[in-house]
Length: 408
Figure 1 (cartoon, helix red, strand yellow):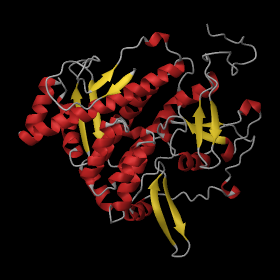
Figure 2: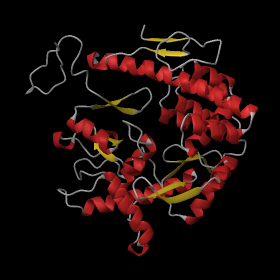
Figure 3: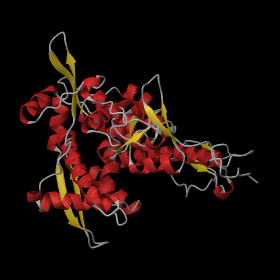
Figure 4: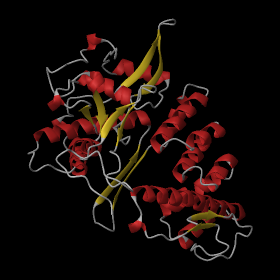
């Protein structure tokens, strides 16, 4: 049996989880080198389920320690016994205490139905305001992390009772920046947290500066994306006289209620809800870029006149796709890809463009991934080719010049 779970009656005295009797979570050892791709996927599913159960058991133990002593005592034990960093011990204990008041979430985590990261999102949201735990647990069973994160944000906004103003206020109060020198590398590390609005604005400005650098680089000696991001941030901070790159720094979206003649459902381009008062304030301070995304008057259909997407198209794609359609990476650091490739006669038209990050772009062009459109949901996705090494038979996706590969 590859995986078995028995929530043992006694919580005490077991040894390492090695498949022995009495283990609360039991995962057998498997020679993964002999597994097919499908077998490896099943194996990861087994390990993910076990990981969730272990997360639940650890949370139960930490919560009990916090109840018997206090939060500080539980953190101290986590650092001593689990050899956790102070930051991880802090987050683990806080999550454990919050999960103690969330019966449905704890049960779903203990049964392996939801991942630990999803449970942590629910736990954190519960500390910030009202939530519908049952709805979130149900969504956590099927949604990816990025999808579920957006689900949590939208529910928090809807249940806030004040259009999300209190939630935004709490997020603004939690803003922080920490700059320290790493003892391991001798390099400086910058950590910062901002509310979604300021964060989106900073991300947009940084991405524009990165694109400016990229356009000036020698194609044969390009910096890595991380190096480019570091250099862009350094220039924005240390050399503000050079100015920020000219481009789109922040995209806000709202629907127009024709009946009441007002803007409603304000949000950042990634779908994060925005309090109406914030939209009004920004409208007074910033330039407004009006866009009717389905109208040809916005020049979103450029045909073969130009290869690269225009600013208007980029805005429309950010609003439609919200992030890379393949992996959910930030749209600010993504590209506009032609579904029907430009070299094959594809047009630079809004319906023929999707948002993809650098890695997914390479998957499409170099690894034969394909962009698929779901007509029911209207969403695009990047899907890999069929298994290049199926359990039996030959692969069918390779280009014709390649010989089919037989699996021994």
